[in-house]
Amino acid sequence: MQSVTPDSLWQMQSIVAPHFSPNGRYLAYAAQQYNKEKSITSPCVRLRNTETGASEDINAPGINLSYSWTPDNNLMYVLHPDKQSTIYRIWNPCNYETKDIKVSTFCHGNSFWGNDKLVVFTRIEDQNEKDNPIIIENYPYTFNGKGWMYGQEERLSFISLTDGTITHITPKGFRIEQTVCFGNKLLIVGYRSNYVGLSKPGLYCYENPNQIEEWIAPGRFYIRQLFCLKDQIYFAGSTGEKYGRYEYSGFYHFDFPKKSIEFFAEYEASVGVNTVMADSFPDPGKKICVSDDMLYFISAINNQSGICRLSTDGTITPFLSTADSVESLDVSQGRIAYCGTKNFRSAELYQITESDETCLAQVKQLSEQYRLSTPEEITFIDADGFKIHGWVLKPDSFQKDKSYPAVLCIHGGPRCAYAPIYLHELQCIAAQGRFVLYCNPRGSDTYGNEFGNINGRYGTVDMKDLLQFVDEAIKRYPQINPDRLGVNGGSYGGFMVNWLIGHSNRFKAAVSQRSISNWISHEAISDIGMDYVRDQMGASLLEDNRDQLWECSPVRFACNVTTPTLFIHGDQDMRCSLAEPRQMYYALYQRQIPTKLLIFKGENHNLLRSGKPQNRIRALEEINQWFERYL
Image (cartoon, rainbow, N blue to C red; front, side, top):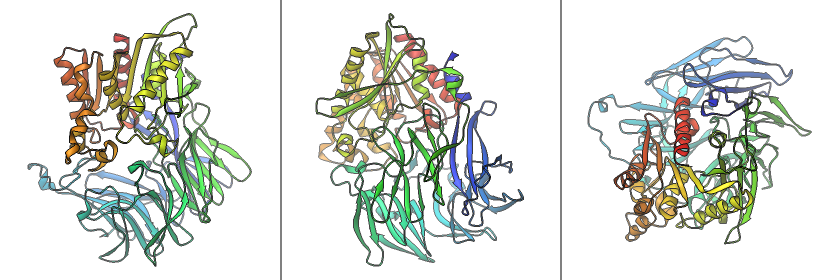
């Protein structure tokens, strides 16, 4: 076998987005692979007959990953011929016939309201804005993955399945985060325009035309996942009073006749979110599902993600699945279908019943074509008594009597986590003859609130854990050359790279991806919300403690940097703006520290996770070349 390379990405495959039909007879899912000729993700959507076990490719014209089921058991997916129109195509799995519903505006989403209406988001662009100056009169005005939002109006709307007519539900300026159908009511989590700036959304109810009733005022709860069980309304969330926006409290019950809220069940982990880091394919499938008056949801605990179940008595059953990481799920008639990773394989399709768990569909694996490095776990107790989990990838063709460079990799978030699963970026670094060291320092997810809480302490306890982890790895692997250490990270990991090279001279080469360098500019420019920096750093440029932000900013210490550093960013990154690496690049360049700024046109914050494959490959090649040059 040959060693893995960045362009091995073209051979990567994965299964995503399982969806049962309402009658449970069919299970739709998709196998993904990159199309080298078109340089795009190329899904093959398949249909499994749950009664016979037979599977077939769905060859409906234009089929894509937007598919879902209609109430009468037909498959529906969304097409966009241009930026001003939408086609909802309905495919019959019995006779293979299709029917189109054409809408003269751009729509996304496809939840059903009864049997004859869709609940969708409609986007209308003001064409007059295109050739005129950009006019900004609201906030936020950017969104990662969508870009600049000026001249755009997005509203929640109904689409009639009989004639395609559109009826708007929400007024202009209403920001929507979630919707759930509740009998003859439509529940909406979001904000009215006069609440812009708050990060805790409200709960609203639509029942009659032109009337939206506020049930929970914004500013009270972080409403993470809204759902209904036995004609009752619940949500997963928190007040954030102790640990801020990333606090895990559990589940709440909303008594809608009384408009009152009561705590329902304690749960100190994510709900409907897989915070375990992956870089194969993004999965658009369901993260929560209600079936038989129980909530099934993806959760991440102790560097593993799996499927949990909440019952109406408040009982929570953890990890019904045996996978290392679960990306999506659906439930029907007591059967759980999910896409997850096991045994260092990319995501495949599994089914859980009362008696067993079986694999329903597999894809070709990189491990069958390339030599891979297997993660070896390191754990230690840090200075504050917390157990830190980390892993080491040995260099390709490792020999005990040789000395090797090592690269410390730092995940984003910070409320994410590494796990011993396949990560293409890390394998590519190891394949070039380097140790790869990666761990979950304080601030990471999956270990509870106290472990994850580094509010106001970025660059302190987390930095100590990272450096102690490097020391532990060097102790256990004498083949690591301590004079040939590199560091690499993205997002929060990019912040930590910028911070480390300004506070330590241990690293001889650094790669900082989609990073933060200045908390003051980040607060003003990022799309993440007005109070994010205040929540995470305990200070704001709008308050008297603004100097604290400067003291916690990596660019403040750029004068100390001696490490050759490569900065990688997308020019459409609205989460950590391009202004961030430009500041660090300027500081290093002016001091004649070897540096390079690599900007990918058209890419946003998700460059190395869901960016164009040729750009992902180029970025990985640049990373390897930088470490080859300076390590």
